[in-house]
Image (cartoon, helix red, strand yellow):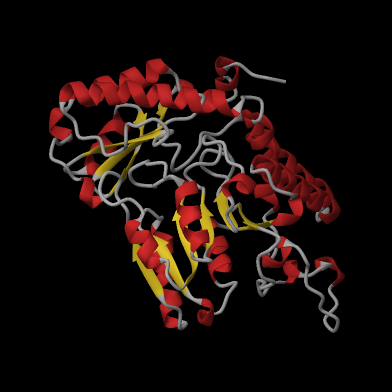
Length: 382
């Protein structure tokens, strides 16, 4: 079944009350996910502890996520956050294997992880490449002798879509693996982990995938090492509860830890079923139309946009410079526009349920409030 964009939007009744342009932080609630959560609560109420039923949903959520990124279900570990997934991927090799290189477009959790890695004896290097300056030269220099490159598919702050293939090629030339954070991409940017050639891919469900917090995953390519998480769900038979004969899972499930987030699995399964009814290309085209409307208004009124305008280098988000981004985001919310602030920018991020009329209303607000935005170039800050 395929849904038109208006039919898709009809699954989100709250959108009649405000403009949800904060999808890079939180997707809107659909009637499908709401119903799925009610199903979970009924199963808990009626049966107390129906783990066989719950684990069926857990595995169906795993399979749906795997299909979304072109992987096999056995290649996915379900986790409670992308930060947790990244920590497991990075820790899958000892400090002696080589340095960990963190590209500076990453989410802040990667930098906190760097602090922990250094305390554990790892060498950590940071790198940043700027298009039009010396693309990939800094990364190439940082990759010598490295074991892993940590990369974000889309910048959480600027909305830039990175040229992942170029980074992967550079890493492979140095015998270096790549861990790719796709949280700001998945659900909008079509993603196939086999085509990308990454060793690890991590994301979660509460943004463009329209699920709940606390439900994420780690893809681990079959050739990655056999390191595992210290948790009972990493066992080959976690429900066997055998304390003496502990056999680990031979697939990506070895990275799983404690009690499964069944609630998140119910929401994930329902959200992905809804999302797949709008073709990926249609989703991407719609959000880019909305971004383009806002960008034109910013250009005409002299607002500073830090998101690249080149084809292929932006998706659902446009980041606009503001002298007090937190204040501007709050003012926009009071006007019925749900957006977010990150450092020196206000982020507007769209989904397929957003309309061009909504984008025009946002553009008009930006044009009509010049004091809330600035013209100076802050590119070096993001």
